[in-house]
Amino acid sequence: MAEVILVDSKEAAGELVADHIAGLVTANPEAVLGVATGSTPLPVYEALGARADAGLDFSRVSAYALDEYVGLPVEHPESYRSVITKEFQERVGANPALVHVPDGSLDGIETAGERYEALLASSGGVDLQLLGLGTTGHIGFNEPGSSFGSLTRVKTLTEQTRLDNARFFDSLDEVPIHCVTQGLGTILRARHLVLLAFGEGKAEALAASVEGAVSSSMPGSAIQLHPHVTVLVDEAAASGLKNLDYYRWATAHKPQWQGI
Ligand code: F6R
Image 1 (cartoon, rainbow, N blue to C red):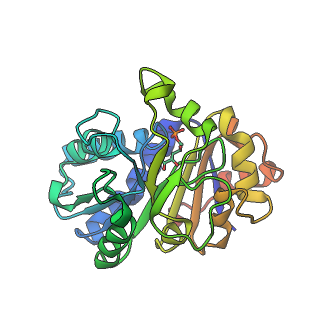
Image 2: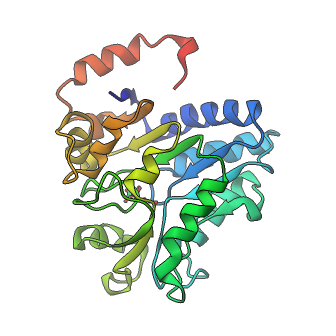
Image 3: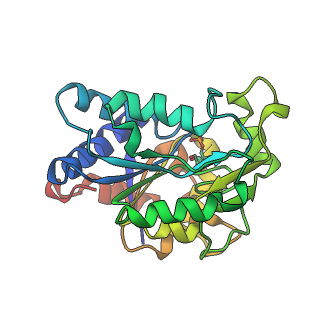
């Protein structure tokens, strides 16, 4: 069962997670982080940037992104390579050679998944994986129906996900239809999963992922199979949880030493 922590704001979640990551990086300057894109992890990257400005050294940290659009040039501002460069790498001063994003270029797309899996295997494993949650219940871009054993591969985005992500593009037509995404099996290999969800739009998928049936129809429910999961949610995203009172109680009485 995941630990569910209620936060007052996404900024508060960003601070909590950044504190934890700062501890990881201090203990192991070569820590391996799993990074996500989209709006959800931005407060974490902002808070990490502040810690880097204050002297935390990310130069030996490796980072692995969850996913990439297929066929979008890497120079496109919405390619996940561009987003991770701008929002994470440049903010914290990570070494570009150690920041990895799946290769979504059409040339060689057939082997993009296995190449990324090989790279991940050579990393020694992800210490902490940041996750957002799609309104369809996807983590990474594992849309409903994704196998729990799946590895990095090309997936087709749902129309709902394309609509959700159209806000980053000039029009819906520009949103790619395919992506390369770590599989649920890949994600479950990370040593610690940190799932963040903010806003009412995530409430249904969040409740189904945390408390619903473990089912490939709700990819986020894969987190229930992992031994170390932390879910940080604001009140709006938490509003569909059956055991909300308990999570509030547990958050209010969380031992200081425990961390996330
Ligand atoms: C991003 C990713 C997706 C997003 C999800 C939520 O790398 O893999 O699972 O985390 O689509 O997106 P936002 O945060 O924009 O609501």
